[in-house]
Length: 276
Ligand code: ARG
Image 1: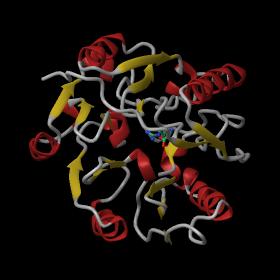
Image 2 (image 1 turned 180 degrees about the vertical axis):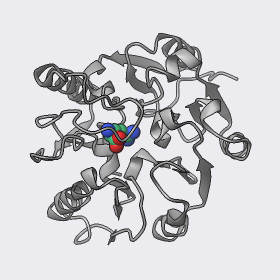
Image 3 (image 1 turned 90 degrees about the vertical axis):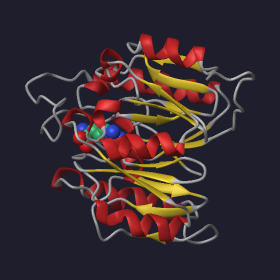
Image 4 (image 1 turned 45 degrees about the vertical axis):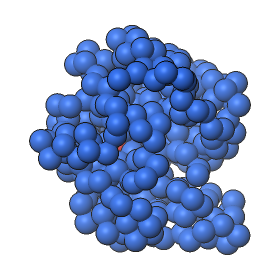
């Protein structure tokens, strides 16, 4: 099934964190190799280009200052989940990233969340923000198994007042939901079937009217770690096959080189927290 008319675009507000202190000095996912050097100026250029794409598309980008000693803080998607002005704070699985949760909550509180906007709830259980929690219009998808725990499901349902779709992740290379699935619009998603179990695949088929299946070679360059505004989809440049599939489905793919960030297991979506 393809779209007769291009899907509707909606201006977005994103929060990003510059990779000022980015390194790979520990390994908490299979992509990370502390022996492989990271080029920080290059990471910074790639990040600036990504931010520039968002602003050129008409989106608003806020930035949170990077903090020394938090090399993964560039991956803003993990910092929280924000839907309809309500914030669920993150709680990281690994100690190396745990202080990031407070930094993101502080920024959000300083920008009015929990005051003139909706509730801010701190999480008592592990959840790695929008990396695993994806807003899909009529429901919220929650990926769990590697980072986020299933125990967060009731909190997500209660805070956001939406049905929750539980998705077990089964391949350690696709350790966050946003490495294996991209919500393209309320009705269409792209995903890598092998990253989910049978129940997860069935749940996704039940939720989305159209599912685009990414090929191995596109999933393996984190091609699904993409940001869609409903029509334009910013994805890793190497995921050329997926870009072609997106175009056939009526979306406009925009490739971006994020090779330095890939060394930490991240891509465009990891660097981007949507403030809804
Ligand atoms: N090195 C980071 C980690 O393992 C990468 C996080 C990528 N973020 C994401 N939303 N997938 O936690």
